[in-house]
Length: 201
Image (cartoon, rainbow, N blue to C red):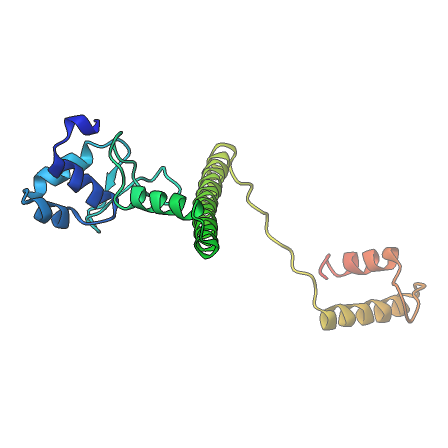
């Protein structure tokens, strides 16, 4: 939709909406029913009307700013650019310095907005990939089945192991078996002890 197909009131409404005015405010400014403003907003490509804030935005733009139809200048945009261009061409050095500062500030602001938008987009992509990975892992577990771990045999506690070693040495001595009084007990002695006691530790 181009400007030659829009009435002056419609152009005013679009400019107000692009400036983040609510549909109610835009409707009141031209004495339109709010539904008519809503319909005009929804007819614009890329515009999203928030039911919560009653304002429009463009999720695809760096800072959410909507794009106006061809031929419709954003409110204040043309005035700012004309004033800045005139100041930059001025013979007054002070005015040129102010213009240069304004231009630099404007450019830095736009760069920050774009970077924030890109960072937010990357964060959304990462979150989506994580969700997809978790879903695939869950699906993989469903297809392959999770191996259930067998019963875990508890290791004897330190005091219990010490008592057992003492019992083995006493038994070995009573049986005339060669078993050192300290250090590692031979496996043959330990096996004989377990067999003699019914395999119980």
